[in-house]
Length: 133
Image (tube, rainbow, N blue to C red; front, top):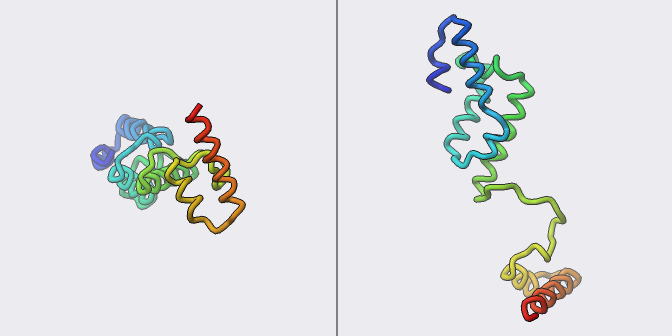
């Protein structure tokens, strides 16, 4: 996109090509991206779209659409920074049934809340019973 935006010629064909290329940037494509450097360049382009040096993004997207794309890019950067490829699934803040075995045992041994420890112990006993048959 940078190369295409750099060649500004006053031709309606060029403007249409730039708009079509810019509209290729979608929320779904951002969510599929696994490269933080590409997302950082995309973020810079979206932030500087109104500065006048990029023809395509300021005219191809409305301000609301650019804002939505910018939010998605920044969320994706945070996720990749955390080492995740997908956001955490919705659910209770701490659900012992969804914890891995190591984390569950560590929680049973170290957590100060006795009710949570009892709940985790019950979950652990249920897992052991399921494994043994």
